[in-house]
Image 1 (cartoon, rainbow, N blue to C red):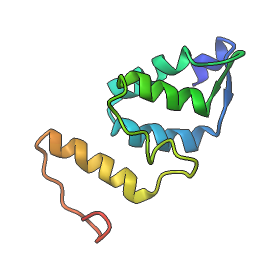
Image 2: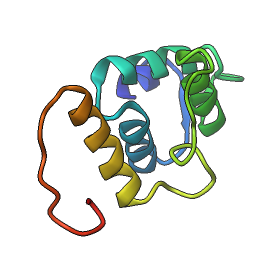
Image 3: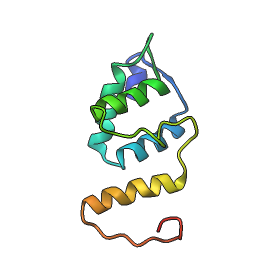
Image 4: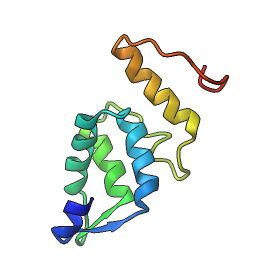
Length: 105
């Protein structure tokens, strides 16, 4: 985001909150995060990157094949949703993980 700000783009959201949302939506995959951000830049209005632009970028980045809930709902995603996102990508990679809590199971 610092690079975007240095280029003159304003950020219209809380950066830490958005980091959680993008982490969950991308399952922590850097390539997917970059795809979301790239698509989001085309949605920026009046020089400001907004929450709605990021959510729309997510939809466009997946070409309509993704579910933006719960990561771009009005409420911040829960820790459980983030753990599930992480577990899903680990399962895709055929990496076994052991849940530490009942919520993670």
